[in-house]
Image (cartoon, helix red, strand yellow):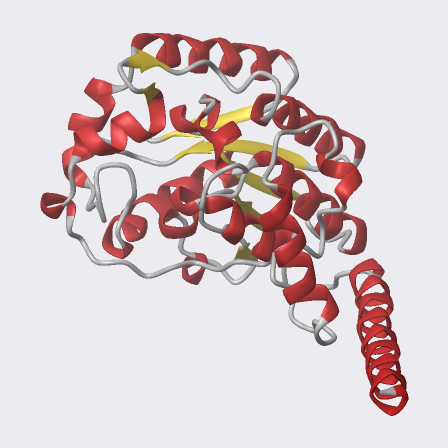
Length: 288
């Protein structure tokens, strides 16, 4: 019995040392400056930017967007990138109607929280989330898997452009609208205490680094645009006016939606990104 207890204690102590060593190593790796080559423009945001801006059209742009990314993750990612890369002069940030919705507040409490935490655990400290409602269990699970088991060399928070097919006819616009803007039959509140707070923080950050910030609304289908509730359209225009007063540019293509190609009603396909990206790059050149 004594031998079993001693063996068990030895195993537990060894395991603890192993796990804590990985935590210490990952803290060191997470704190290191992030260097990226040949990059003057970074595209940041959620899946709308991930599928909508193709960096293949320019040698100096990188698309680091990831699906379901809230602005708190975008803020931390932008801060990390700007701190180690003085050549970055422009930040493209996804800014659509859905980014204004409390739908984003709920993401940290749903199944989507797992992907958000896994993608951004190297940036997210518990202190960052202290004032927010989030799924503590999912956060801890993500921390254990991604920070305790082995040294995490890859930068999980750096996404990339995603090639997608044009399959709008297979998607349901009413389901997408309901997800983005409704809680049951009630129009959702704005994300005033979460996403929009961090949007302001991103603006302050870019001004601090003297970097040009462009808020980008990727095209959506006519069916989606028509069904966006008016309060969200009005809120969007109000924020655009506020941003203009702060010297922040916003870009939304005036090309008719029928001239684009869509993965679904709210995301461009790769073919659609091929239409949109050159227009965006021309706009960036025009405001330099």
